[in-house]
Length: 351
Image 1 (tube, one colour):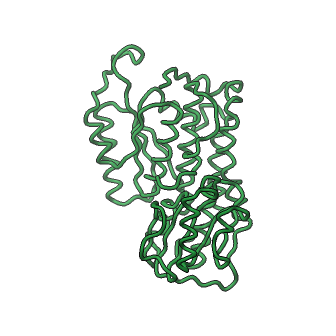
Image 2 (cartoon, one colour):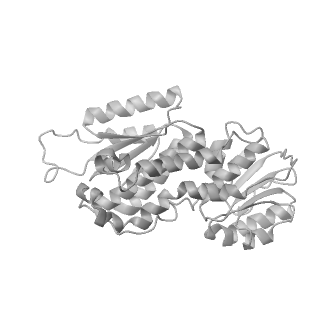
Image 3 (cartoon, helix red, strand yellow):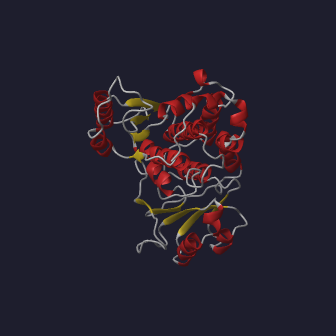
């Protein structure tokens, strides 16, 4: 665990230069969405009317979370080897394998081969020359990918599924613009006074974060952000529903306003709220409850706003704001510079 948090590092361009690759990877998220969208198209006049949809691979649960409220047919995100027993010629199998692990992995290769053997309709997002692309039936709808970014590939697949009536409208240009907006506001060239990501890093400070998202997609983003903070800092980080976080907060010792934070007491907690802005009444009530609990024990509260736009736009905004905050937190801690870990870059889909 790293304990030497120093916010002065956040505006030291010499220090930030060592984290250039890490920050650049986040800054290029919008470009990766555009690259994947450039070659994505469905055959003219294509009609897909499956009995059910099975989504497998990296970001399968993101695709399910976006489709589920409006998809006119049963839909599952499948994380086990093979396929569910009922999947057959009337069903669509969506395989997300844009990353090297997925496109060359034996699990998805076997799943795609099984879907082909059963005569399922297949939509496959993978590099065009991959072993996976060569293994499936020629009838499969290939969505060629080039960036190895599963989140970018998932956004493009969602836009295609909308075109055949299986999901909500997803505009890849708007999603890329949302990513660009976060990259601009979080630039290392903006100092702490005008950089919300650096401000979040200071809010995290030396505390152990409790992260809550008030919608399905915000909750998913919270888990990804927690992974990033945990990876860089080695801290205990909890991303959970309101009930679990409330249970933890009820055991937090109320903060002593006269305590010396450098010499007294245990490490504190910080509550990070992901505001999707389109939460249900239940979600709004849970947020109020968490705020009241935080106030009662003197726990600091940090907020991430999703802004406007579609569900996908808001998810991209929340996720990147959190990942930038986690990266700047690593800078302030003096953590070893390095590339964004594979799970944080979206390459593990069953989170």
